[in-house]
Image (cartoon, rainbow, N blue to C red; front, side, top):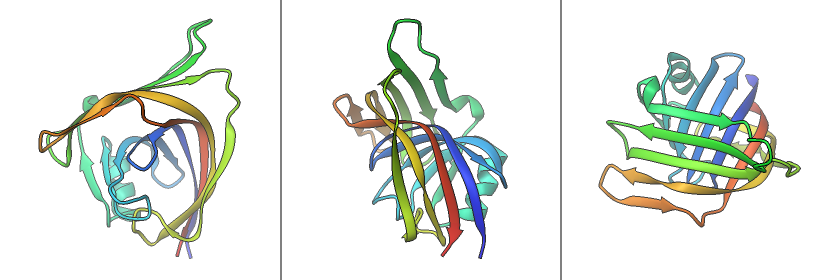
Amino acid sequence: MSEFIEFYAPFVHVPGRYEWCCIHSVTHGSFVCFIVVHDGTDRPVTVYHCSSHAARFMADRFPESEAISVPPSRLRIEAIDPVTGSGDRIVRCRLSAATGPVALARMTFLSPVHAVPRPTPYGGAGLPVWGSRWTCEGVDMEVDASVVGYVRLRDGRRDQLGDDRAVVTVGSYGRLRER
């Protein structure tokens, strides 16, 4: 049975809908991705990525999910150091894609820079990640956040974000294990 430790930072999300993260994998390197959650994180998802590291990661670990490659200039996650006195941690994210369910996504996450992150355990044995043969158990260091932005779907619908619950994870640790 295989087992791997991975780290995720920055990692921001609108729970149950959208996730943006930089995955740091000992086997596949570091890469950014935008994840569209369709029916929960235990079911296949759509993952937009912009590197050969991510393409190999998705093919090796999560072939059940849809992996869509975009040029690096079309997928960005930018964690901005707080301006002195601003009081906010800022993460700006953007995607522009020619294929897949999302055509365009823009989100800005804000969380208080002085908020103490709370350790939030997740996953566990028997809970599949993205409908795969893997489970993941770990801890997210979460801070409540606000998010503004939108997602324009390929079919023309627009998902406007503004009053949605959001999370900024200042660091996350996960142990992937084969089921």
